[in-house]
Image 1 (tube, rainbow, N blue to C red):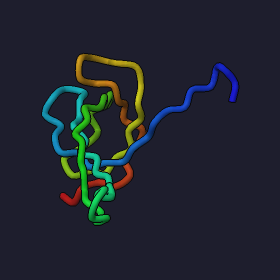
Image 2 (image 1 turned 45 degrees about the vertical axis):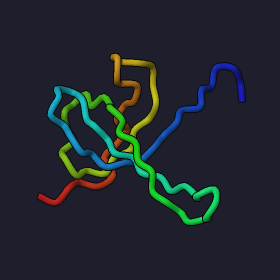
Image 3 (image 1 turned 180 degrees about the vertical axis):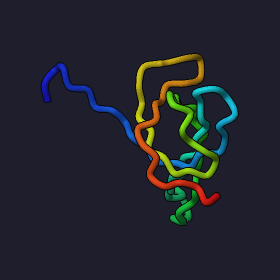
Length: 87
């Protein structure tokens, strides 16, 4: 890997809010193994992402990537919509 290449972090999640202009809230779930009991449990994070075209609806499954900070709470950008929500 050269110095000019940057590794971007991509995650998939479900849109839970699109009320703000050009902003979506994405719920990202991951499975984590419990340290003592070994059972897999679900952990989730809500991330604010930049949606330039206001194309996402609540319930869409999307891919977002990490980018430079756009605002106080937004440091993610919408890459593509994987699955549209049922109307």
